[in-house]
Length: 362
Ligand SMILES: Nc1ncnc2c1ncn2[C@@H]1O[C@H](COP(=O)(O)OP(=O)(O)OP(=O)(O)O)[C@@H](O)[C@H]1O
Image (tube, rainbow, N blue to C red; front, side):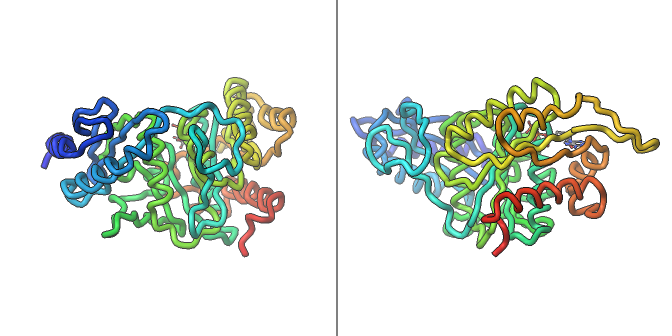
């Protein structure tokens, strides 16, 4: 069945579900577009603040009906209320009460979650996140990598993931395994080139399900590759799970650093420890002469880290091999582990494990 036909069938079936206040879910203005991908069906129901509980049965019924029509696809139905008043607190908030942010809840089996973010796009955040995860694996940790960059997922390319993740009978994803780590990405569920417009509530719901409805097994560390910037996904992740820390990737340019400062500010306000800044594309070493060129300036991220009172974790040079190997699905940490570039990632991991001993393998 064509995707559009499947979406139309689901929408029409939602007409049998009655919503609080009367009327059917199919006609309800808060029902989002129904997104169909080769392995998933996703839609959101937006309700007024305080109406979440009343709409719960409608959401459950929608999930069931969509599951019956979805032909083996994973169904993701999110129920979202209008945004609660800005939460500046963080920490374990009360679980009930109108507008109260939900309590941060651990993901069973996962000891630590560390997010990798950046202020600006295109600074190499995903490349760093993948190599960072693999370097943690080399350091002896059981590692997973969650691609939360729903708008531009690149983990499938970086790790060479092929095919869709399997969905168990109970609807739980089985993650991909690559180079000794587990990996989940919404990108692996899309057709090549398929663009999905994740509107705010659906994005946060998709993230929640990738995080909580995946059979991660026992992990010492889940690395989360965030989208660039400081949007809904970041706030949602920071609010819904306790994070052991966040790492910010920046290039040395002032513009990237301004945005990196904003990201660090947000993370601190949400009371998540900032493990430090990694400067990517720090400098270029000419392969023929070995001459170092500071093409984006030098020392910018180190200075910004000092100004912000957060650790500076290290520099990753701009190297053709990093790009070529990442694009080929064999990141430098696994394909050339003894090379200087891989060593730069290992040194960063060693610094973090020194500074945050709780993360070390047990
Ligand atoms: N240190 C590096 N040396 C050479 N190329 C690099 C380096 N880091 C990243 N790249 C390349 O830069 C490009 C962008 O990297 P990447 O996709 O990781 O960035 P990003 O910050 O995650 O981007 P987005 O904002 O789209 O999520 C990729 O082609 C990648 O291979």
